[in-house]
Amino acid sequence: MDKRNHLVLPRRKTSKLATFFIFYFLITTVQCHERLVKHISTEPPSPSKAPEFKDRFQRIILSILFGVITGLICALLFACVIRCFIRYINRTPILKGPVVFSPKIPPKTLESALSNETLLLGPNPNSKYYRTVLDNGLTIAVKRLELFGNGSPQIQSKSAKKKIQQELEMLANLRHRNLMSLRAYIRQSLGFSLVYDYMPTGNLDDAMTRVRENQLQLSWDIRLRIAIGIVKGLHYLHFSCTPQVLHHNLKLTNVMLEAEFQPRLADCGLAKLIPNFDRGASGYTAPECFQNCRYTDKSDVFSFGVILGVLLTGRDPMDPFFTEATGGGSLGRRLRHLQQAGEAREALDKSILGEEVEEDEMLMAIRIAVVCLSDLPADRPSSDELVSMLTQLNSF
Image (cartoon, rainbow, N blue to C red):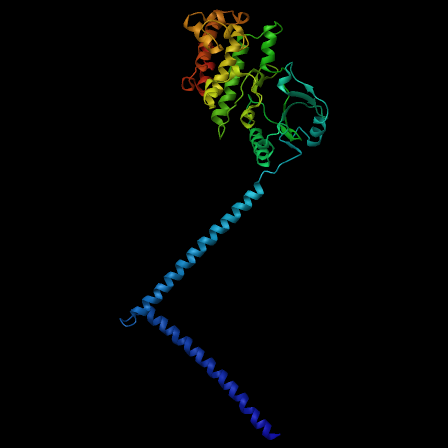
C-alpha cells in the first residue's frame, strides 16, 4: 500500500511542475514579445532587420487593403439585397378590386353600383361615358375601357396590365381646376372602369351642337373663358407635371363643362396609354402625327387651335365651309386664307357678333388660332405663351 502511494505522488507533482513551467514560459514569451514590439516601435530598425521589418509592414498593408476591399464588396452586396427588397415591397400588384382616391366614394358601394345598368351620357354613343348614382347619393361619371377583349397579347400580358395600372395611378395624382381628376378605377374582366366627377352641363361638343341648333346661347366672353381654361389645363400638363404629360386626344368631346361653363379636360394621357384608342376625330390631329407618328406638346397646341376655331366660327371642324372651300381643305387653311384676304370676319359666328371691341378681340383670336394650326410644330406657340396671349385679349 505504501509503495503504491509512493509511485502516485511523484506523478502529480510532476504534472503540477510541468504546468507551472509551461505557464511561466508563456508569460515570459509574451513579455519578451511586448518588449520586442516596444523596441521596434521606439527605435528605427537596424540595417540587418530592415528586410524583415519591410516584409511585416507590407503584410500589414495588404491585410488592410484586403479588409477594405472585402468590406466594400459586402457593402455592395448588402445594398443590392436592400434594393431588391425595396423593389419587391413597392412592386405594383395587379389589383382586381376598386382603387379609390376620393374619401367620398366607398369601395363596396362603387363596386355594386358599377354592376348595375348605367345611363349613357350624351347623344353620341362613342363617348363611352356613363352616369350612375352611388348608394350615398353621389352621382359619378364612368368611362369604360375595354382593353382585354381584342385578343392582343401585348395588352393581355401581366406587364402590360401593370403598366396600365401604374399610368392610371399617375393620372390620379393630377390636380388642377381645369382637369377631370380620376377619382377611382376598377379592373374588370375586359378592362378598366374609370370614375370621374359628374358634369351636368355635358361636354363642349354637346354645347356647340345646341348652339348651332339655336337651343343655347354662348356669348364671346363665355367662349373666351372656355378657351383660357383649356389652355391653362394644357399649361399644367406641359409645364407643371414631372414627367411632362401630353393629352394626346384633345377635342370637343373631351372638354367637359361645369355648371358655369368652366372647362375641364378629360381623358388626359389615355390615348398614349392605349394606342389607337378613341381617335375617331382626325380633324383635331396635327400633321406630324400622320407624317412621322411623332407627338409633342405642340401637337396638343394644334388640337387646341381647332377647338378655338370652333369656338370662333361655331362650325364643326369637318364642316364643308372648311373642307370644300377654294384654297381650303381644313379649318386651319380656311382661316388662314380668309385672314390673308382680309375677310376673317366672314368666318365668325354671327350669333356672337356685337360690339366693336369684342369683334376686334375675336379677329385677334382668329390670328392666334391660325398660328396654332401651323403645319410646322416650331411655328406654333407653347401653351405657356397661349395663356398670356388669350388673357390679354380682354385688354386689347
